[in-house]
Image (cartoon, rainbow over all chains, first blue to last red; front, side):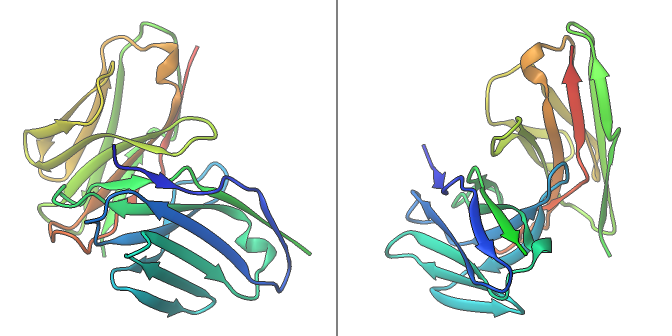
Length: 112
Length: 114
C-alpha cells in the first residue's frame, strides 16, 4: 500500500513568517512530486512540482526533495493571510499512468 | 489553453437514486482522465482513471462506475446511491507524457446523499 503522510495541522504562523510543510512517502521509485493548495470548498490547484533532489524556488514558494529520505517539503516565505488553506502533497505512482497518491493535507493558518 | 469543465457544482440526491456526473476537457487531445473523491476532512481518493476511449480502470471496489464515451469526456455514474457516496467529486486530467505531468482539476461536484 503506497502512502503519503502529512501532519494534519493546523499549522499556525504569523504574517510575514516562513511556513514549513512536510511530507513523507513510501514508494521508493516515485519520481514526481507535487504540492497543491486547496481553499475551503474549492478544488486543489497546483502550486509546485519537483522531480530532482534539491530545492526548487518559485516566487515565495520553495519545494525541497530528498529521495534518499523519501521526504518532500514546501516552504512559504513572507506568509500572507491569503496563504491560509490546506496544502496537499501528491506523489506519482511509478508506472501508473500518471496516477497521483495524495496525503490528507496540512491546514495552514496565517494570522495577522 | 486547456480547460476542464465539471457539472453540476452541487447535487443533493436521495438514497437509492441514480447519479451521473460529467466532465469534459478542452484544448488537449488524448488526455488521461481521473475521478477522485474527497470525503469531508479527508484526503483525495482515486476512484477511476482512463487512458483512452472505453478504457476504464477502477481503483477501489464501490457503488460507482465510470465511462469514457469520447476522448475528452468522462462520466461517473451510480445506479443506486448510498449515504456513504456523499463527498466532493473531482475530475482531473493530465497529458499523456509519463511521469512529469501534474493533475489539473475541475471545480468539483459536492454531492450530498440524504
